[in-house]
Image 1: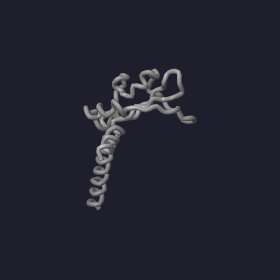
Image 2 (image 1 turned 90 degrees about the vertical axis):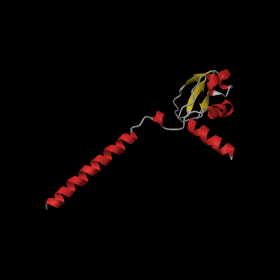
Image 3 (image 1 turned 120 degrees about the horizontal axis):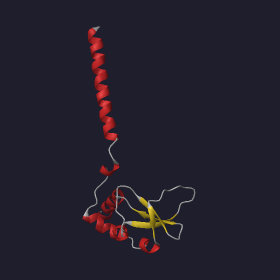
Image 4 (image 1 turned 180 degrees about the vertical axis):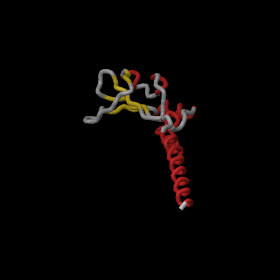
Length: 117
C-alpha cells in the first residue's frame, strides 16, 4: 500500500514538473524564432523583399504602417526604412487601396534556398 501511494506521488510530481517545462517553452517571445537577417538575405531582399497586392475584400488586415507609392516602388525594404522581421508585414499605400507586403525572414530564406536549386 505504501509503495502504491509513494509511486503515485512520484508520478504526480514528475508530471507536474514536465508540464511546467512545456509551459516555459511555449512562452518564448516571437523575436527569438525565425532566421536572422544575414548579408546574403539583405542582398536578396533588395530585388525580392516586397510586393504590392490589392487589398483583400472581406478580410481585416491590420496594417503595420503607411508608405507612399514612390517608396513602395523601391522594392528594397531597407531603402524604404522598413526592417525585415520574423513575420510578414503589411503597409497601406497612401492614396490607393493597395497594400505593400514586406516578406518575413522565413519567406526570404526559403525563397533563397529554392532559387539556389
